[in-house]
Image (tube, rainbow, N blue to C red):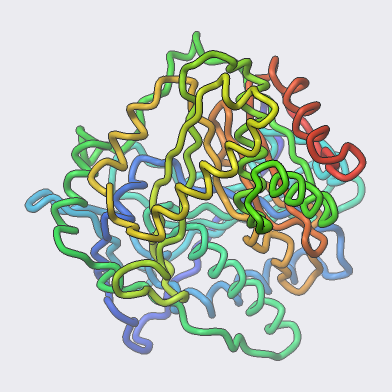
Length: 458
């Protein structure tokens, strides 16, 4: 489709030159195996849609720019360049010396799209144009960029798009940045100063024996043509089926009901976590919708935060990656059974428990065990029901909608906290011909009146 978003101005937000020394580890941030694991993944791209506010767009831009400039020194690796050294093979974020050398691209744009329609209907191509694209097929590559777009058609509104390379931060680190940036922006308008803990970027906090060798192994396995980092497509274009995307919001009462139902079915004696509940529900619904009723395994793949479970616990303010890949599987015939949801819940709980016991137990197999999953037999579960998507308020109100643009796998579900307390937003990508079946299962298993579909795209 032709572009529906028109750039007005491209500039940069630079780290102040000649200011206070950068926090540890300074101008070169050697990345860990946790970071290297994500080197071929496209940058994480997220869009926030904000309703019209009395604030003129020029003031919105000014608040976003000035607050980002204030926050950037605390997140200085985001202003750097993702690069490498060939001998020995290693990955780093480098912050060059010089005026304006360390910066984040900042794009101002406009669109004739109708804001209300985009809130209600998922328009994949339009949302992609509302988030900056920092993909590079080969290193070096930028770490972050931001874009703010004014809806100049009927109704007004503003979109804030952010792209960050996953090798610089995991989900918890990225949301810490977004919280700090938005709180600082609101503080700019209200004359307040961010009072949260300072973010930490020193990868020595996640060091362990053999970590340098493991980082090299990941780079060799994931990017054999390094420094080329463009991933190979999962399938030739002619064999790829069109995907449908739909976003669901589960009210707090619906989440509680689903927890109670799964706890009773699994006879756990305790109420399961929101994460285990929603991922089990998504795994079963996607597997059933895709018609997996045979005895071949269907895998669930998700991430577990390791900060509290490392041999030396990692501070919560650590921004870099500290997540472990978890995989678990059940036969398609098991997931299709009436007790399939209970079996899925127990399998996910056990996978999480294994990571808590030893987060690094199978670290050398993270790449190979995911690659070994037969094509089409993985359900990918990302995000967390605790990520505060609708708490991001730059001072001109909470967003009407938040979407992860970088979802492109058949059988993927992304979770964030919903707009209302205790609610959960689940965005799902699945083959277009499977979406009607999935929607019926996903809603029906909880409560049609409480699991509200937000939008769909085919």
